[in-house]
Every structure is written in structure tokens, then in C-alpha cells.
Length: 351
Image (cartoon, rainbow, N blue to C red; front, top):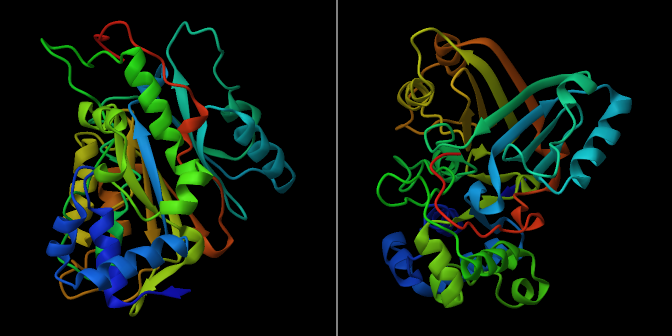
């Protein structure tokens, strides 16, 4: 367990809720701690590997129509082959492997593209719990690896600043769903997605984040909405503050009950329990939630309702999988750099 100081906890929350174009000066001022303390805490958070930078693109910029979320509990002898198959597929952007279950996020190609979709693992592999394909719309993936909400609970603050944040989707004009991605923007987006994995950049200035440290072309891609900056917590570190710590990965899936909308699930969780999942995705009928449990003592401002009772009131066919963070292996963590951006000649009318 890695117990953080009050200053480190404050800085961590400041970074998780920051926007890409927010200056460090404004973050320091909002944190109300001395500049030198802020900068030293930020440096340690990055150097110790507690935080990692990522850039999330609109899937359309990569020639994709959306995401596939896979949760599986295969037989013991099938775990390694399944994990290897997923890791070798360039469309797999996230792969977490535990002792009994694995979780993967893949990109789904548009219909008619030359490259065939990944084999149907749901029928080929026993133990698949969730195989959810979501044609991307902002309302279907309202939370996408946004960890500010869960750390707000650890820090014991009243609420996050920017949570919830989903996948970026640049707005077109005259009712068009997307603005065009020019060849020049495609080059800048490719460089941006690869930036966190460039050893020369990361070894020199891993803590230098956001707009002032990005080339103009990459800032333009972010400003246009083709990508979003996200900071991830390292689950391998089991971060803690005071009596609260991150212990378990919790994946919840279920079918929406009649008359229940996807937004009703998260609104109910927030109001009754104070829960803030880092992932919320659905296809209109099924919902997948990703959360972190084992937070320990509640703060005085946290609602005390039952999480399980709230879920049962909104979802049927409820399935809950728990994996200890201490045994969870992160094979891939939002590795969108594995896919090359595709210039878009015109703004598509739909997904």
C-alpha cells in the first residue's frame, strides 16, 4: 500500500480534474498550497509511477465506429491463450488480467472495412461474462476512464470538478456529427497518441503536462476535439490516503429494467451512495460499469445508501466481478498509439 500525504492527495486530485489547456499556475492557485510544495508533490507522483498520461481519440479518427468491452472468466488453462490473443490484436487498447478474470477494451471497425473484426470470443471462449459492442455516441459512453470521481471519495472532498468525462467527439457544422480530420491533423494526432510512450520525452519531462509543453499542431488537435487528455491512476500501487485506499477492481454488468435509462443508473448511484464509476458504457439495453472498491471509511459528506440495492433497483441479470488490485496485471492501458489515425475526407453523418 502506498500512503500519500495530504499535499500529494490534493495535487493528484488537481491533476485528475484538469483540462488540457489549463495552466499550472491556475492549478496551483486552486489547490491553495505553496508552489514549491505543489511541484514537488507532482514530480513524485509521476516519478513513482502513481500517475500516467494518456490521450484518448475519437474512434472515428482511427477509422473505427466504436468500442468493444470484454469481461471474461475463462477456465484456468484458457486464460493465458485468451490474454495473448487479445494482446496481439492491435485493436486492443486496454487489457487487464487478474487471477480469475480479464478485462479488455477493443476498437470496432466500421462495416465494410478490409480488416475483419476479431473472432467472436463470446462463442469461442467459455466463461465470457460481457461482450458489449457500443457504436460510439456520447450518451452511450458518458464515462471513459475518468478517475477523478473515485479519487474524490478517497480524498474525502465534496465532489469532483470535471467528472464525468467520456470519449471526445468533435462537433461538425450544419448537423454533421464530426468535423473532417485532415491529413495534417492525422499526423499530429498520431504523434499525440504516441507521446506518452516516447522514452526520450517521458524520461526527460514526465511531469510536464498539458498545453504549454505540447507542440502547436498537437494542441490544435486537442482544441478541435479529436482527442482528450486523461490521467490514469496506477492500480498496481494500491494508493491510499488516511483510512481510505484502493483495493479492488469491480466490474458490474446488467440489463436495464423496463422504464430505466442508462443515465438513471449513474444518477441513482451518485445520489444514494456517492459512487463514481471510472467507466460507464452501454448499448441501450446492457450496461457495464467499472469501479474501484475497498475505499474504507466513508467521509461525512458521502451518502450511505446501499450500492448493491441501488444496482438491483435499476438493473436485472446483475453480474459483479471483483479482482484484487494487488494481483491485477496491466498488459495494455489505453494504448491507442497501436492504431494509425485515418484522414477523413468529409464529415460523416453518423457512426
